[in-house]
Image 1: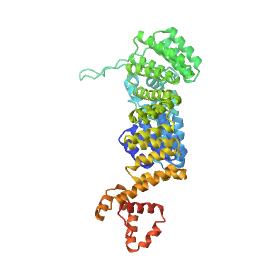
Image 2: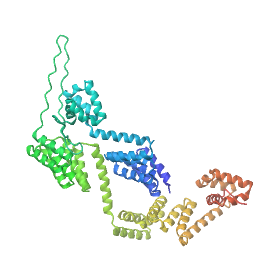
Image 3: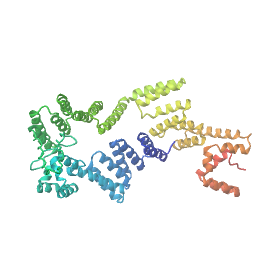
Image 4: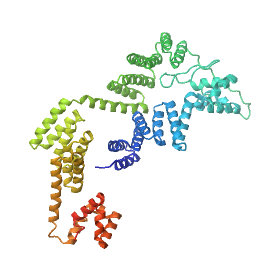
Length: 557
């Protein structure tokens, strides 16, 4: 049976190879052996994060911190998962908490800087990566970028969002620039824009002007003023008021403004889609689905952009997800992808597919039917029909995966068909659920008898430490002792050199002889045979010496 460290090493190797499923499998197996090892949870958190399973990554990060509150990397794992889930405030707090216990941890410092930057960008439109591009694309604000004083003030606004208000009051250009970045019209004060995560906005109209070049013979002509952007329609004005109320969580007022927008223009799906967002926030998921579906109908009738239609399906999918109707959620997310391929929705589809599998697995559990299948497996086993018995045990395990008896029964079948490693695995599953299940120890030892008698004996001794008076365990140990004695007798016709040569093919013997401590003891025995008695008081050394004697490598005269 692999140790937790061996499984961790396999998990690390799989993680480095970007085989995340295999990495998670190995880490999970290691955790089952050593659930108090905080590093295992940290590593599995990293694998989950690589897969985009941020909720699972967060749970493992939290467990890691719970197990070891003085380990900086645990806080880093937890905070990273929070950041991926857009829980920026919580992520920032977690990074700060980690730096209290590990002030020099560079990963924590870098993570804190990153979430603070993300936090600043989310509340500072001038600091967004697209800000300069939008200002350069607009014919009016393009000229601002040629003014060093404006660029200096823009740098101040980007680094310190608290200066935005005073800059807009002191320089009207900043008011205009904010409107261009947000894609809305602003007069004498800032207007609330659409929320990127829930509200829908129209792309800003961009007017391009061909650059004028001065002729050598003619004076340069002045560039004619660019046409102004069209004014907001009354319906859009109502939508903006609804967006502002939505951001303030005044949902009833937001609905009133969106309804007015729909009365003024019933061909624009975004007004209805924004109503769906309000109902989603209110927890009225049925109404959200109704509004999102209606918005799609309006969009189809009026040839809305595919991306807008995709938003409608996505909103329905999110609402079904909240209702735990995973199949309906998946159907709508897939419909969204058929309109517009968003990588985040691709990832969400994978997560919902996993939820569906888990839901189906749980729905299939039925202890009564599991016991019926197990009994049928027992009958087939008695008849010697081991392959069909295994199938029935498989069915019983699927119906009730927590019943230890079925794993032990299937192990007996695997031993009969020579699948000893599978039998060993099933015995481990049995003992995981019931550490005192004696039959599991007996069958596990049986699976090792053909491969390693010493390993089989160790398993039985473990069982004997739980039930010292168990006759089956004692008989199995005597049986192994007899098998060892028989093997020794079979070497009677071999020369000493032949016995040693055969023994050296045994990996266990090779490992013992490679131990420097054992080699020192063997050398000491040649000079002083009585020294062995003291060494045999150590049970670990005694076991190794016994193995060398049984193999014929060491002979006592």
